[in-house]
Image 1: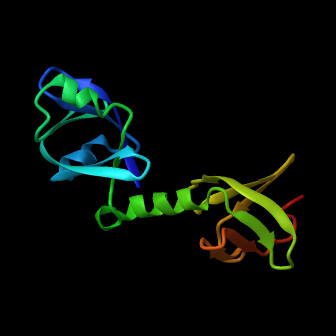
Image 2: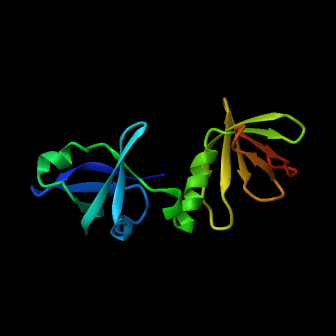
Length: 165
């Protein structure tokens, strides 16, 4: 899961400036190492030697990053978090991200569209389902969402009366 984006170097001693994709830049203080996605399929692990929070960014000092040039090499790289390091809130966020793009059909086989967005509300999430000009907001409750099949990229729903009107 992507949890941060390196926006560049901070200072001259090799610190990297990370924009947190979570709501908590302080979360970076909890890590002994960072996993950085250097390419789409390549990652590097770097031990953390210090973290400061400044103006909503995490300023992270990594071992072996001794000057600004080294830190700048990682600009625009993502910082990843392993599944075993996720908090319950991050697990929920990851699940929401995995729903985007899934095809939604009714139990009767009618295609309703594709999930474009997962909207967080106080009581339950709401799935924004779009098919061309048609849009539906489906509450993520057991009475409506019957099956989520991530492997096949589908969601099966039962529509409550008046839900699409």
